[in-house]
Image (cartoon, rainbow, N blue to C red; front, side, top):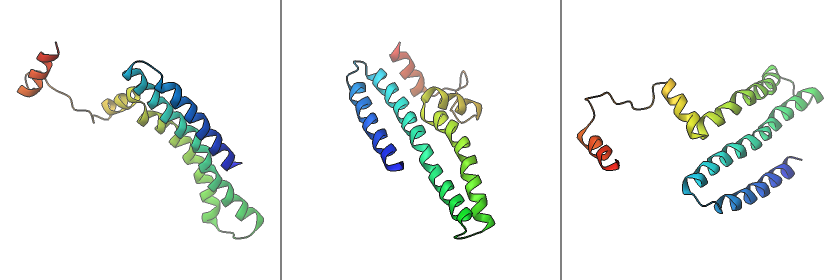
Length: 126
C-alpha cells in the first residue's frame, strides 16, 4: 500500500509539473511550484505513520515489549499533527514571511538608517 501511494504521488506530481511548465508567467510558475512542493510533502507525510504502526504492531503482537516502543508509536502520531502545519508555514512564501515577521527574523530597515546601496537600488527601481 505504501509503495503504491508513493508511485501515485510521483505520477500525479509529474503531471502537475508538466502543467505548471506550460504557464506563461515566471512568477506564477514559481508560486505554483511552491504550492506543489508543499502538497507533495503533505502527501508523503502519512508515510511517516508507517513507523508508528510498525512500533504498535511489534508491541501488540509481543515480539518486543518496551515502554519506549509504546511511547514512540504515540509520539509519531503527535509529530504528524505538528509537522503538517509547519510544512505549509515554511514552504509557502507568504506564510514564511509572516512567521519571520512574528519571530523578528526578517531584516527590518529603520528610516534614515538605510545603506547608500539600498537607497540607490530603490531609486533605480522607480
